[in-house]
Length: 374
Ligand SMILES: Cc1ncc(COP(=O)(O)O)c(C=O)c1O
Image 1 (cartoon, rainbow, N blue to C red):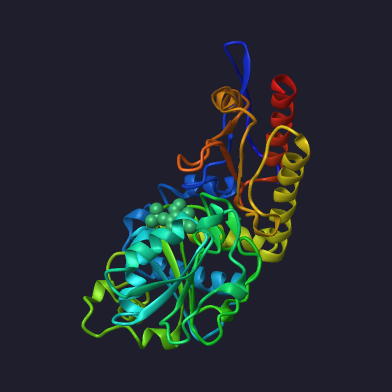
Image 2 (cartoon, rainbow, N blue to C red):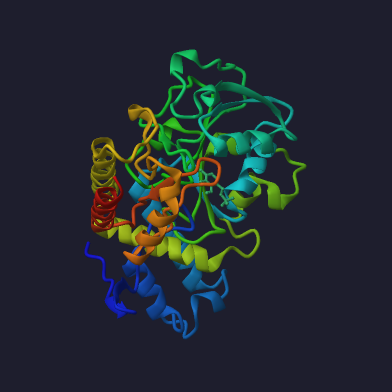
């Protein structure tokens, strides 16, 4: 997919008007989705209003809600015994709600492979007994703890994992087998990036601002039997069972976020679905990792089998080059490459909507920068 940026000349330099955006989130969206949203901003379908101005219980919005769920079910092959919820509050709210709903008064196992998993475990503590079943913290979260060494409790309410750690750039490339205990996965930064077998999970949840759409919206895919665990005395607004009963319309949803997600699902289907997207993501990541590994200038510390296809951190040989690298990258139309403050260096987030050409441009820039500063 060609990037439709237009080159403009400013102060004697060529700049891209719409840059390649490597932000970890909120992140790049498919350009065609943004254009459609722009085109429909004032009048959506037959409503003669913006999608933001119509009732979430009106027939047009209900049709969008139903279609978006059908598209998502299609894309991810979600089995019939799972509910799909479109809720709010960012993934962080659900760090707290998951144990309230599924583990009250019980123990839950957490596997830590980075800082988002740590946060999820911390937010769970007021509601359940958190056990750290495995952690790669001693290895600076540069790898995934060997599955054979996980100390899982067969009576745990669930096992929580973060399949892609957005900050460290560590990703599970296979779903861990945790026996009969439900597997709960924070897929905020790798949902829809490749095909997965949903039936291996009890709950999949994801904030929308990377591969789904706009921040605020959170998607949850929950196996039906788990909903029976939700305590009856929970306030309705905190109860997944209540949200499922009401089809995510217990209160006013994030209608614009839901609409954008619906457009992104349609875009994914048009692009060929998750097999095609997964292959494209693998190719983009391979291009960047291969260059980093052979550059003799940049490096990535993550164990090869655990490297993320979505978030690729890398460091330069000398920290004093970080500033010039970021400045020159921005002038070349390559934005938001600064690594998270906790790890430093750089990070290129290359979600579904980042075209291959964006990664090629980044590699060309990195080559040129290394030549001049190496
Ligand atoms: C893996 C992961 N989990 C959770 C979050 C938190 O999401 P939110 O800010 O939407 O609460 C993020 C945010 O980047 C993330 O990358």
